[in-house]
Every structure is written in C-alpha cells, then in structure tokens.
Image (cartoon, rainbow, N blue to C red; front, side, top):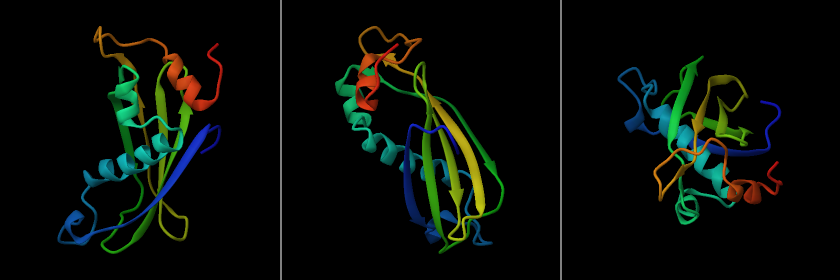
Length: 139
C-alpha cells in the first residue's frame, strides 16, 4: 500500500460469534473489520461520521470490494490497515488484513462520495472541509 496520505491500523481478535462450524470467519464479517479500521482512519484526520454530518455532508459508500486470500480463524489476531489513497473527488480507502506474521489474508477498498445534506445531491469533487482536515489546499 503506497501513496497513502493517511493510515490507521487496528488489531482485532476473531471472536467465536464471527466464525462458522469450521472456525473460519464468515465472509460478511470482513465488512465490519474494515469499517472499524475506516473509523480509526477518519478519527485520525478529525473528520469522523459525526463531524461529516456536522459539516453538512453525508459520505455514503458507493463501492466496496474485498478479495479473500487466506481465511482468518477463531481466536486469531488480525491487523487491519486502512490507507487513504484518493481524496480529491471521492474518498478511496485501501484495506489490507494480515495475520501476526504479516501474511496477507484479505485486501480490498471502499469508495465514498460527498452528498450535500441540504440539496441531497452528490458532489463531483470533495468539499473544502475535507482538504482542511487533511491539511491540504484545494486545487
């Protein structure tokens, strides 16, 4: 994961209620794991979901992709890394899930776009508040 402006890492121990009878994580739970990392990343830039709403924008996810390489299992500790790789017209966040030996288990990305809360219209470029939070000037 290169070219990331901001990153966040979270460790998660796989709970019993996330696994099937083979003690393998059910595929749908990975969405929860990347959401935890995404929230940590947004906290790192001081623009979490409450702050987004307060600034007048929704940021719905319009695309989410995950590629499963190796299974995560009950009791295993995984590291989920979220990396902000695009921000000018949308938020694109790359994800990498590894085990404690740094072996890749899952990778993917999500895309979010700004929607003006008053007009309910999608913005075709990210609002100035995001650039301020990132410490960048809007071009």
